[in-house]
Length: 220
Length: 262
Image 1 (cartoon, each protein chain N blue to C red):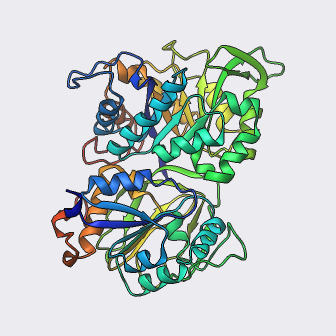
Image 2 (cartoon, rainbow over the protein chains, first blue to last red; image 1 turned 90 degrees about the vertical axis):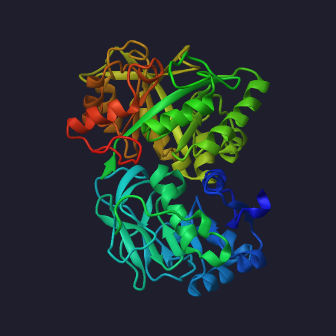
């Protein structure tokens, strides 16, 4: 059976817990494969960039594994990539969490810490509202586990927004490149539907069209 | 605005759910995987699994249970019980837990909190506090920390411990009232107020809930999430009943395709 299941490569660096991502992709009929090999990441048709931990540790791990450049190249080329949580943050230029550490910089802007009278970390469910140009993202409630976030929408991407002491970027998308601050793999049936739509957007020529379904909930 | 979470709790020993759980549609009421899936279907926002196995074999079984539950579950999973080292935590996270709850071991050695937060991030580290009401020394009520599954009282002030633990890197507090747990008298609202106003991280309230009317006051008192076991396990209420009750009181609940719509 496994041979028929489309491979989805997951970037494995550091100590990130990947079991939830692996399980969520498996439930969608994909064959998740963990890798930290630059050539494999470069060649992967469909890639997930997860991440928990600190911005500096994540960037250090990506650079040490020599995958920063191939990640940058594939995102600039618009190849199917789903970045999750810290995976979204490292796409930006820098983060207040780790001053002086450069991110991948494929998305303009800086990550900053939540401000105001709110609980930090943001642990729990929060409403997501999409800009009209979103195709993969949809309105709904998403599960978050983060202390830092992007406060401004980067040019060239469609954005979805949440609010925690002020509006912040819930997710951004450009074609089959989707980056979520929330955890779609932990966001129940809404998150599962998002993963299905992303796999579908990753392209029928990759044998993933059978996984696609119609968009559940509000089209945005 | 964060949406209040409703969190069923499973007590598991040697791979089986300890307390009797009565769901008519479940073939095996002791199977943690079937129960976890049922709670997600009902609209649970997260699941806590406390493993009370006392033997090394039981602990190994717990890892298999976590992996099996993770395979089915698409909501967050917190696992606690007997976590004593970063190796214990790493094994649970590797098996599929999203967060690890620590209690007695953190009181014995608070640096464990910093070790876990440094290695896995604060968002993975839940400090469980069992708090028993103490004779107040001033005008305000006070609580002392209880460890070893409630069998050993300490002199540690619960609010002080909460602040210290957050300073060490705890990302969330699972707060159980020792006095109310199992009483059915409702959450200890004073305790929730005291702890949630002492720290900036989310607080999960636990202990004492027996009716739907106990829920909203705990949220008003400052809880970010509500843990419940008995009211769900004995079939008195489904998670959807809780959500509908909260929504009727004007409290936002999570939108799900299978659960309640606000």
